Amino acid sequence: MSIELKIQPLRYVLAVREEGSFHGAALKLHRSQPALSMAIGDLEEKLGQPLFEKTHKGQLTPFGDYCLPRFRELINQHDRLASELQQMAKGHQGRVTLATVPSVASRLMPEFLAAFVAQYPDININLHDENAEFVCRLVANGEVDLGISSMWVQDEALAFSPLFEDNVGVVMRKDHPLAGRQRLKWQELTEERFIANGTSRLLKHTAAASLVDNNDFFISNMISLLAMLEAGSGITTLPRLAFPVANDKLCFVPLSEPKLVRQIGIIKQASRSLSPSAQALEKMIHAELAGMAIS
Image (cartoon, rainbow, N blue to C red; front, side, top):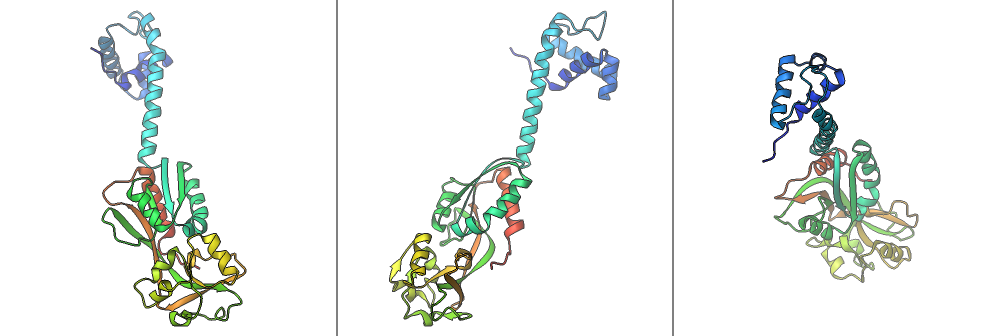
Protein backbone atom coordinates (compact mmCIF):
# COMPACT_ATOMS: atom_id res chain seq x y z
CA MET A 1 0.00 0.00 0.00
CA SER A 2 1.53 3.33 -1.06
CA ILE A 3 2.14 6.06 1.49
CA GLU A 4 0.91 9.63 1.24
CA LEU A 5 3.66 12.23 1.35
CA LYS A 6 2.95 15.71 2.63
CA ILE A 7 4.99 18.53 1.12
CA GLN A 8 5.84 20.44 4.30
CA PRO A 9 8.01 17.71 5.95
CA LEU A 10 9.91 17.39 2.68
CA ARG A 11 10.68 21.11 2.85
CA TYR A 12 11.94 20.60 6.38
CA VAL A 13 14.35 17.90 5.20
CA LEU A 14 15.74 20.23 2.49
CA ALA A 15 16.10 23.06 5.01
CA VAL A 16 18.01 20.86 7.47
CA ARG A 17 20.35 19.76 4.69
CA GLU A 18 20.89 23.33 3.48
CA GLU A 19 21.40 24.79 6.98
CA GLY A 20 23.43 21.86 8.27
CA SER A 21 21.39 21.39 11.45
CA PHE A 22 17.86 21.09 12.81
CA HIS A 23 18.40 24.24 14.85
CA GLY A 24 19.41 26.29 11.78
CA ALA A 25 16.48 24.95 9.76
CA ALA A 26 14.03 25.80 12.56
CA LEU A 27 15.33 29.38 12.67
CA LYS A 28 15.12 29.74 8.88
CA LEU A 29 11.55 28.39 8.72
CA HIS A 30 10.37 30.20 11.85
CA ARG A 31 9.35 26.91 13.41
CA SER A 32 10.16 25.44 16.80
CA GLN A 33 12.88 22.80 16.68
CA PRO A 34 10.71 20.14 18.42
CA ALA A 35 7.92 20.65 15.88
CA LEU A 36 10.35 20.33 12.98
CA SER A 37 11.99 17.24 14.48
CA MET A 38 8.61 15.62 15.10
CA ALA A 39 7.47 16.22 11.49
CA ILE A 40 10.68 14.72 10.09
CA GLY A 41 10.40 11.80 12.53
CA ASP A 42 6.85 11.08 11.31
CA LEU A 43 8.13 11.16 7.72
CA GLU A 44 10.94 8.71 8.57
CA GLU A 45 8.41 6.40 10.21
CA LYS A 46 6.21 6.46 7.11
CA LEU A 47 9.19 5.74 4.86
CA GLY A 48 10.54 3.04 7.18
CA GLN A 49 14.10 4.37 7.08
CA PRO A 50 15.97 7.22 8.82
CA LEU A 51 16.88 10.22 6.72
CA PHE A 52 19.50 11.69 9.05
CA GLU A 53 22.32 10.04 10.98
CA LYS A 54 21.67 9.68 14.70
CA THR A 55 25.21 10.78 15.58
CA HIS A 56 25.01 13.95 13.45
CA LYS A 57 21.52 15.32 12.99
CA GLY A 58 22.46 17.44 9.98
CA GLN A 59 24.08 14.60 8.02
CA LEU A 60 21.96 12.52 5.66
CA THR A 61 21.98 8.74 5.69
CA PRO A 62 22.56 6.93 2.36
CA PHE A 63 18.78 6.58 2.13
CA GLY A 64 18.48 10.33 2.81
CA ASP A 65 20.97 11.02 0.01
CA TYR A 66 18.76 8.97 -2.30
CA CYS A 67 15.59 10.80 -1.21
CA LEU A 68 16.90 14.37 -1.28
CA PRO A 69 16.87 15.05 -5.07
CA ARG A 70 13.52 13.29 -5.36
CA PHE A 71 12.06 15.39 -2.55
CA ARG A 72 13.37 18.50 -4.32
CA GLU A 73 11.83 17.40 -7.64
CA LEU A 74 8.46 16.70 -6.00
CA ILE A 75 8.48 20.08 -4.22
CA ASN A 76 9.32 21.90 -7.46
CA GLN A 77 6.53 20.11 -9.32
CA HIS A 78 4.12 20.88 -6.50
CA ASP A 79 5.05 24.57 -6.46
CA ARG A 80 4.81 24.89 -10.24
CA LEU A 81 1.39 23.25 -10.26
CA ALA A 82 0.16 25.33 -7.32
CA SER A 83 1.31 28.54 -9.04
CA GLU A 84 -0.26 27.52 -12.34
CA LEU A 85 -3.59 26.67 -10.71
CA GLN A 86 -3.54 29.91 -8.74
CA GLN A 87 -2.84 31.96 -11.86
CA MET A 88 -5.57 30.07 -13.72
CA ALA A 89 -8.07 30.63 -10.90
CA LYS A 90 -7.27 34.35 -10.90
CA GLY A 91 -7.76 34.50 -14.66
CA HIS A 92 -4.13 35.44 -15.29
CA GLN A 93 -3.50 32.66 -17.78
CA GLY A 94 -5.42 30.33 -20.06
CA ARG A 95 -7.15 30.47 -23.43
CA VAL A 96 -10.29 32.38 -24.42
CA THR A 97 -12.21 32.12 -27.69
CA LEU A 98 -14.18 35.20 -28.72
CA ALA A 99 -16.52 35.73 -31.67
CA THR A 100 -17.58 39.19 -32.83
CA VAL A 101 -19.38 40.76 -35.76
CA PRO A 102 -16.97 42.16 -38.40
CA SER A 103 -17.55 45.81 -37.49
CA VAL A 104 -16.59 45.20 -33.86
CA ALA A 105 -13.65 43.02 -34.89
CA SER A 106 -12.17 45.67 -37.17
CA ARG A 107 -13.09 48.90 -35.33
CA LEU A 108 -12.89 48.03 -31.64
CA MET A 109 -10.97 44.82 -31.11
CA PRO A 110 -7.44 45.84 -32.23
CA GLU A 111 -7.03 48.52 -29.56
CA PHE A 112 -9.05 46.65 -26.93
CA LEU A 113 -7.20 43.35 -27.32
CA ALA A 114 -3.84 45.11 -27.28
CA ALA A 115 -4.77 46.57 -23.87
CA PHE A 116 -6.09 43.21 -22.65
CA VAL A 117 -2.96 41.29 -23.66
CA ALA A 118 -0.79 43.95 -22.01
CA GLN A 119 -2.68 43.38 -18.76
CA TYR A 120 -2.94 39.58 -19.12
CA PRO A 121 0.12 38.51 -21.16
CA ASP A 122 -0.35 34.81 -20.38
CA ILE A 123 -3.92 34.59 -21.70
CA ASN A 124 -4.16 33.40 -25.30
CA ILE A 125 -7.02 34.93 -27.35
CA ASN A 126 -8.65 33.29 -30.37
CA LEU A 127 -10.83 35.79 -32.26
CA HIS A 128 -13.52 34.74 -34.77
CA ASP A 129 -15.02 37.29 -37.16
CA GLU A 130 -18.58 36.23 -38.11
CA ASN A 131 -22.02 37.66 -38.81
CA ALA A 132 -24.43 38.15 -35.90
CA GLU A 133 -26.41 34.97 -36.49
CA PHE A 134 -23.27 32.84 -36.63
CA VAL A 135 -21.80 34.51 -33.53
CA CYS A 136 -24.89 33.41 -31.59
CA ARG A 137 -24.62 29.91 -33.01
CA LEU A 138 -20.96 29.59 -32.02
CA VAL A 139 -21.75 30.64 -28.45
CA ALA A 140 -24.80 28.36 -28.20
CA ASN A 141 -22.79 25.38 -29.46
CA GLY A 142 -20.00 26.04 -26.97
CA GLU A 143 -17.47 26.62 -29.75
CA VAL A 144 -16.52 30.01 -28.29
CA ASP A 145 -16.58 31.35 -24.75
CA LEU A 146 -18.03 34.78 -25.50
CA GLY A 147 -19.63 36.67 -28.35
CA ILE A 148 -19.93 40.41 -29.00
CA SER A 149 -22.87 41.03 -31.28
CA SER A 150 -26.53 41.88 -31.48
CA MET A 151 -29.17 39.21 -30.95
CA TRP A 152 -31.75 39.00 -33.70
CA VAL A 153 -34.03 36.62 -31.82
CA GLN A 154 -34.45 35.73 -28.16
CA ASP A 155 -32.82 32.47 -27.16
CA GLU A 156 -33.25 31.02 -23.67
CA ALA A 157 -29.93 29.21 -24.03
CA LEU A 158 -28.07 32.53 -24.33
CA ALA A 159 -27.54 35.42 -21.92
CA PHE A 160 -27.22 38.92 -23.41
CA SER A 161 -25.61 41.86 -21.57
CA PRO A 162 -25.99 45.20 -23.43
CA LEU A 163 -22.86 47.25 -24.04
CA PHE A 164 -23.79 50.13 -26.35
CA GLU A 165 -26.15 51.21 -29.13
CA ASP A 166 -25.09 51.59 -32.73
CA ASN A 167 -27.23 54.01 -34.80
CA VAL A 168 -28.40 52.95 -38.24
CA GLY A 169 -27.98 55.31 -41.17
CA VAL A 170 -28.05 55.49 -44.94
CA VAL A 171 -24.83 54.89 -46.88
CA MET A 172 -24.38 56.30 -50.40
CA ARG A 173 -21.85 57.94 -52.69
CA LYS A 174 -20.71 61.40 -51.64
CA ASP A 175 -22.00 62.84 -54.91
CA HIS A 176 -25.52 61.47 -54.35
CA PRO A 177 -28.23 64.21 -54.19
CA LEU A 178 -29.12 63.17 -50.61
CA ALA A 179 -25.51 63.04 -49.39
CA GLY A 180 -25.56 66.56 -47.96
CA ARG A 181 -28.50 65.97 -45.63
CA GLN A 182 -28.09 65.95 -41.84
CA ARG A 183 -30.63 63.12 -41.50
CA LEU A 184 -33.10 61.23 -43.66
CA LYS A 185 -36.61 59.81 -43.38
CA TRP A 186 -37.30 56.43 -44.89
CA GLN A 187 -39.97 57.86 -47.19
CA GLU A 188 -37.25 59.84 -48.97
CA LEU A 189 -35.61 56.56 -50.00
CA THR A 190 -38.55 54.85 -51.69
CA GLU A 191 -37.49 55.92 -55.18
CA GLU A 192 -33.87 54.92 -54.63
CA ARG A 193 -32.33 51.63 -55.73
CA PHE A 194 -31.92 49.84 -52.40
CA ILE A 195 -29.16 47.29 -51.81
CA ALA A 196 -30.05 45.05 -48.88
CA ASN A 197 -27.39 43.45 -46.68
CA GLY A 198 -27.18 41.27 -43.60
CA THR A 199 -27.95 44.16 -41.24
CA SER A 200 -31.00 45.24 -43.24
CA ARG A 201 -33.15 42.97 -41.08
CA LEU A 202 -33.02 45.83 -38.56
CA LEU A 203 -35.60 47.52 -40.81
CA LYS A 204 -37.99 44.59 -40.54
CA HIS A 205 -41.11 45.23 -38.47
CA THR A 206 -40.64 48.99 -38.81
CA ALA A 207 -42.26 51.56 -41.08
CA ALA A 208 -39.25 51.20 -43.40
CA ALA A 209 -39.72 47.46 -43.93
CA SER A 210 -40.82 48.02 -47.53
CA LEU A 211 -37.29 49.15 -48.43
CA VAL A 212 -36.01 45.67 -47.65
CA ASP A 213 -39.01 43.86 -49.11
CA ASN A 214 -38.56 45.68 -52.41
CA ASN A 215 -34.77 45.64 -52.59
CA ASP A 216 -33.01 45.54 -55.95
CA PHE A 217 -30.03 43.55 -54.66
CA PHE A 218 -29.04 41.55 -51.61
CA ILE A 219 -25.31 41.44 -50.89
CA SER A 220 -24.02 39.80 -47.73
CA ASN A 221 -20.29 40.35 -48.32
CA MET A 222 -19.11 43.77 -47.13
CA ILE A 223 -16.36 44.14 -49.76
CA SER A 224 -18.83 43.47 -52.58
CA LEU A 225 -21.42 45.75 -50.97
CA LEU A 226 -18.97 48.67 -50.78
CA ALA A 227 -17.90 48.10 -54.36
CA MET A 228 -21.53 48.34 -55.53
CA LEU A 229 -22.08 51.49 -53.49
CA GLU A 230 -18.90 53.09 -54.82
CA ALA A 231 -20.02 52.29 -58.36
CA GLY A 232 -23.24 54.21 -57.73
CA SER A 233 -25.41 51.12 -58.09
CA GLY A 234 -27.66 52.14 -55.20
CA ILE A 235 -27.83 52.98 -51.51
CA THR A 236 -28.03 50.87 -48.38
CA THR A 237 -28.43 51.11 -44.63
CA LEU A 238 -25.69 50.16 -42.16
CA PRO A 239 -25.03 50.56 -38.47
CA ARG A 240 -22.59 53.40 -37.85
CA LEU A 241 -19.89 51.02 -36.61
CA ALA A 242 -20.08 49.05 -39.86
CA PHE A 243 -19.52 52.15 -42.00
CA PRO A 244 -15.93 52.27 -43.36
CA VAL A 245 -14.77 55.63 -42.01
CA ALA A 246 -11.63 55.61 -44.18
CA ASN A 247 -13.64 55.35 -47.39
CA ASP A 248 -13.40 58.65 -49.29
CA LYS A 249 -16.15 57.86 -51.81
CA LEU A 250 -19.04 57.10 -49.46
CA CYS A 251 -20.90 58.99 -46.74
CA PHE A 252 -23.16 58.10 -43.83
CA VAL A 253 -26.40 59.99 -43.16
CA PRO A 254 -28.33 59.10 -39.96
CA LEU A 255 -31.81 57.68 -40.40
CA SER A 256 -34.22 59.69 -38.25
CA GLU A 257 -37.60 58.19 -39.13
CA PRO A 258 -37.64 55.51 -38.02
CA LYS A 259 -34.71 56.03 -35.64
CA LEU A 260 -33.07 52.61 -35.49
CA VAL A 261 -30.28 51.29 -33.35
CA ARG A 262 -28.39 48.03 -33.29
CA GLN A 263 -27.82 47.02 -29.69
CA ILE A 264 -24.41 45.43 -29.23
CA GLY A 265 -23.72 43.30 -26.18
CA ILE A 266 -21.90 40.33 -24.72
CA ILE A 267 -23.41 36.93 -25.46
CA LYS A 268 -22.64 33.83 -23.41
CA GLN A 269 -24.30 30.55 -22.54
CA ALA A 270 -26.99 31.10 -19.92
CA SER A 271 -26.48 27.86 -18.02
CA ARG A 272 -22.69 27.49 -18.04
CA SER A 273 -20.02 29.26 -16.00
CA LEU A 274 -17.11 30.98 -17.72
CA SER A 275 -13.52 29.96 -17.15
CA PRO A 276 -11.51 32.39 -14.98
CA SER A 277 -9.69 33.74 -18.04
CA ALA A 278 -12.99 34.28 -19.87
CA GLN A 279 -14.33 36.02 -16.75
CA ALA A 280 -11.34 38.38 -16.88
CA LEU A 281 -12.06 39.14 -20.55
CA GLU A 282 -15.77 39.71 -19.89
CA LYS A 283 -15.00 42.06 -16.99
CA MET A 284 -12.63 44.14 -19.12
CA ILE A 285 -15.11 44.27 -22.03
CA HIS A 286 -17.75 45.73 -19.69
CA ALA A 287 -15.23 48.17 -18.23
CA GLU A 288 -13.88 49.40 -21.57
CA LEU A 289 -16.77 49.12 -24.03
CA ALA A 290 -19.99 49.56 -22.04
CA GLY A 291 -21.76 52.82 -22.81
CA MET A 292 -19.26 53.93 -25.43
CA ALA A 293 -20.28 56.46 -28.06
CA ILE A 294 -19.89 55.40 -31.69
CA SER A 295 -18.63 58.10 -34.04
